[in-house]
Length: 482
Image (cartoon, rainbow, N blue to C red; front, top):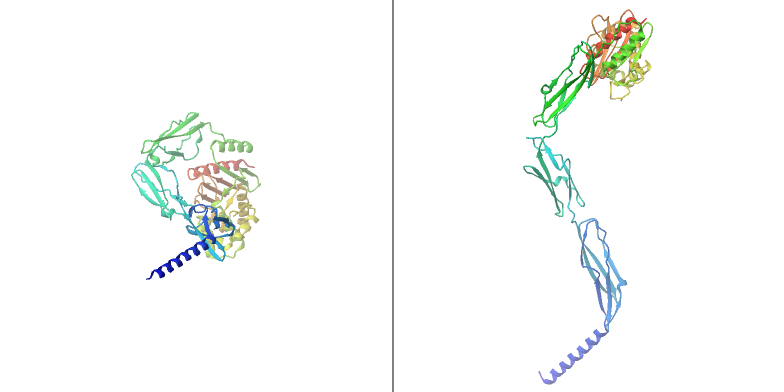
């Protein structure tokens, strides 16, 4: 190439450089600068605070602030893990400029494991710990209970769980074999017993519960110093030891007292002695007596409400004999419900009659709380007054209904009949028995026929003795009742 051409090209390059420099000198330079970090990490659920950005346009070495022309575009869900963009956009002189900030929503909080029961657990010697349970809550994943890993060691259990962000938690339950708990001795019957001189002391016994051992009541050592030939207060001691050597002691107080005399013809004196006798014997009872000739009535604790159990069956029989043209199958159901207190027959009769019809009938004959529990309870509550009303009505039906004698014979039975004792005349009765409740209600056909109602809450220990004893005393009242 000739020297002239080289010189020409050089001149052109120089000119172009001058032109470009001139243009750049007068052109504006746009800058967007984020306030704060370009990458932000934010805990899930936390509030996002916009930090903003600055923008400037510079030329001839001078800059002007155009930050107010920035538009911010963001769609951050602070409740959902993920990476989100915040875009800062600037439109200036028909050109668009932008800058991006990254916001990472993260979960750094570990789950919380809560143990049910004691963290320091005690188990009986030789027994394995029975898991009482645990639950796990997490700020993001919520319930993680099913994700827990349980590792059992010799004397500890480790519970570990991780959430979806690999935050891990663990907790230790310490397990120790130990038995320092004494057995619990529960007295059958009352803690205090009153008995009369020269009566035989009847040991009611105890039951024993222990946290670690099965202890038969026969293992209980009983120290019985009761001398019924001498008045006084005696303490019966019950002692037992479990397999770990823990001991327990319980006491029953026995008072030997002079017997109450019922050798009187004065009715009020007899009643006073009877009520004193009931209290001294610790009888938990309610009593009703009605002389069916004179209508004289004696009541004791008559307002106490009891679960009536099978006493309700008397009303089944009354309703059927008064209201239904029944067949032989129905008659057999009535006989079973009364004579052997058959529950299936009772339910069949109630379903046939309709519980609402039976309830209305019972209340119409004077039983104020009859079948008052619910439409699914076929037994209900009762009181002395309710039973007197029912049996007065039964007595009237037996005496005035053509089939009264047939109905009467169902009630004359010895099935769970503890009203009976040597010398008592013909006796109708119906008993009710459930849990701690035992009741016997009847009509005694003496020369002065009477209704006797004995409602008890004596449990299975001595209700037979209580009912028979009181039946004898009520018969004695009847003999002097004129």
